[in-house]
Length: 395
View 1 (cartoon, rainbow, N blue to C red):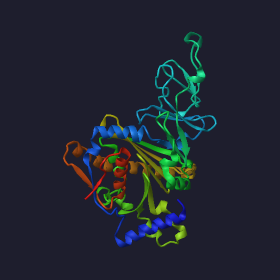
View 2 (cartoon, helix red, strand yellow):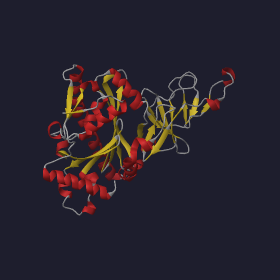
View 3 (cartoon, rainbow, N blue to C red):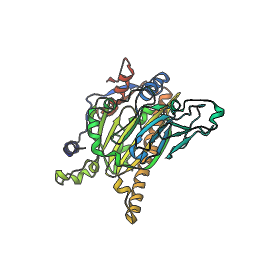
View 4 (spheres, rainbow, N blue to C red):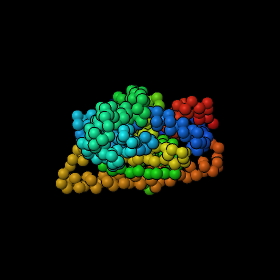
């Protein structure tokens, strides 16, 4: 983030602290609880938001060298993403062109060749069919036409995007918008190294997981013994950018930094930028690296989803040696584990509680306060994308 923008945002945070205020959506809104339980809406979301939209499958550091690969099954489409021998990011349907078996079953690694476990048809990192046993027995086939089925893929700003539809449109100008396309390069995401990965299969709708990242109003109650020790609750900046938005949470380090020269101010120390990339990605860069959070609906069950929470470290920290490396790794591991614990044991527990009540039909509607503008934006965007006749209703 450019320094002038960091200063502008930090001044906003300080003004809120001094005035006892926060961002203001202007109205209280309500939404129907059926948005978390309706099977028809859930299926429309899956088709339009997930199968019809480019998806972030990781950061550049997840494919750090030629031959690196990762697999992804979160969308219901088996995906194999690779870094080919020339360093290009590519993606394919992870299904053998012979009988359709899953080709690569490992979640990640480094390989020159991918061999189907069924009949050993073999593909290279560019998806080309490079071998099949006993070709004289099998029959004459054009191997050039039998490579893995390619998916649209693009690496931009250190993020890896794949469209799960082979005929889908990869339009990252539209998906990321002007603000994120301008701001993301300043974070140097491409240089980050993956350190820790967690997966949560939670009994709540994927949107309840997203809602978790939309406000700090709950910090002083739900996180009173954890995050509230490090953050000013109910104090934030908020800016919308089309179907995306950026929040900046307020760390307590700002209390000391306000007394230093502005040219020394650093938003990654005094705050925590939280970027929402439609529909399901939360990206949070901070002083040591970045957290990447992605939530995926469980097909056929609106009341369940899977969240992936990945932590990436700055390369200069990851490449430390000797005693410094030990201390850094211990500290970073503690940060990653503590953060993941908050999500799992504090936030998602509340999401499951909300889902249980929604499943029971306990309430027709829930409310979003004036101090929760990101929640307004999430659900307004979902409604607009689905073409629903009625979006969130002001009270």
